[in-house]
Amino acid sequence: MSWGTELWDQFDNLEKHTQWGIDILEKYIKFVKERTEIELSYAKQLRNLSKKYQPKKNSKEEEEYRYTACKAFLSTLNEMNDYAGQHEVVSENLTSQILAGLARYVQELKQERKSHFHDGRKAQQHIETCWKQLESSKRRFERDCKEADRAQQYFEKMDADINVTKADVEKARQQAQIRHQMAEDSKADYSSILQKFNHEQRDYYHTHIPNIFQKIQEMEERRIVRLGESMKTYAEVDRQVIPIIGKCLDGIVKAAECIDEKTDSQLVIEAYKSGFEPPGDIEFEDYTQPMKRTVSENSLSNSRGDGKAEPKFGGKPKGKLWPFIKKNKGAAPEDFSNLPPEQRRKKLQQKVDELNKEIQKEMDQREAITKMKDVYLKNPQMGDPASLDHKLTEVIQNIDKLRLEAQKFEAWLAEVEGRLPARGEQRRQSGLYDAQPAPAVNNCAQARESPDGSYTEEQSQESEVKVLATDFDDEFDDEEPLPAIGTCKALYTFDGQNEGTISVVEGETLYVIEEDKGDGWTRIRRNEDEEGYVPTSYVEVYLDKNAKGAKTYI
Image (tube, rainbow, N blue to C red; front, side):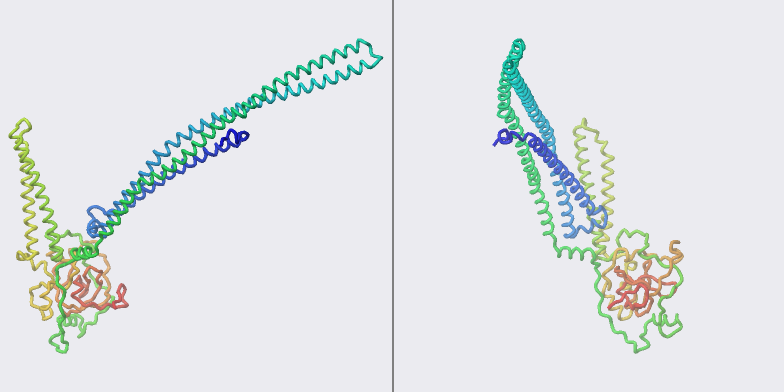
């Protein structure tokens, strides 16, 4: 199977075919190049995606990654980052192993093809020139033969005519002989050129063209082999990263298998457990006896001038609103006394652990400086021992300072855990901690620490000082008072000693101006100038369904 023998007359088609082969190779190069760009773009998008969902440092999101499900998600993000790296490797390998080599090969292929077809055209032009010479000699031989034949016929005619002179006959004979000689010369020339052309033609079709076409065939076959090898390399580049990509996916699966719903549930308990006991049973209040009516009903009826408390919804009390919680600009106390017991214990324990780590770090530094000083004492040429005294003194002072700080937090921690008597207990206790005598319902509830287990860091006790309305920020002067959306009845006595809270007496009826938003507090109003927050579990709420903002409870 040879192009030189099978396709000896398809020079133009072979030229088109080889050009098409180069176009195919260039098309494949373009395909691989676009694939590398896609891989790089995909890797960049994966990295950006992974970075976008990484938890921000020193934020609430970082705390959420204690849960096993969030840890698994974080592992997924890290694995996706490695996954993106493998796509970058694919792009780099495709560029180095395929694109660079093929680009050079295409240029070499074009030069080789140009050279081969140049030789073919040169041989083609040579055989065409020989053919033209042959045709010219043939036509000349044909013309001379015809001229010789006509001269011979003229001589015979003149020789047969008796009226023609002998001189004319001789002249005709000589002319016939000349023409005959010219024909013989043309014949010899034509024969020589024909032999030469046949030789050149045999060489052209059996030697030159087969050799040129064989080289073109070999060139084309090398191009096909190179393209096939590039395709294999293309597949191998992907195959090489499959194990690593598989490890990335295995890491995601392993992280998912480490998700433990029970552990997450326990973490929720540890995160939000207040340490309070749930409220006990509510005692029956006998309203058949006038003497047992609550103080709040009497005070409410006296203030309204009526025997019954019939609050009006939608009223607009005058006076400033206390910006509790939402606009609180104060910082949390150092001893975390604003937190429920369990949350406070956790915060204090965390602080103690951090201080102990800092102390250990400073002690290690002190030990290192001490050893260095001993080396300087034994080998004065290495350094001056006195130069380390200032640094050693500074480290010792830091250790003493940190120890004092740790002792302070350990004392607070012991206080929470019941090892020491509570200090400032009256300041931090809610109404159920109050030592004042209370009705039977209060005595029952007093055995419990608090009927509300949903205290949050910012809604618990924050300050010892009650701030008067005259001390409010000016930015709240023009704030519109909220309309009442219902009423509530106090189930327990609550001594609102913290800023933003309001004291209530068991059985008292008040207005509700803002219901519980999930933080365990309800905003109520006693009169036009007195309002604040009470624990939701201390009151029984009756919302007006027609009031704006009221929710329907089933």
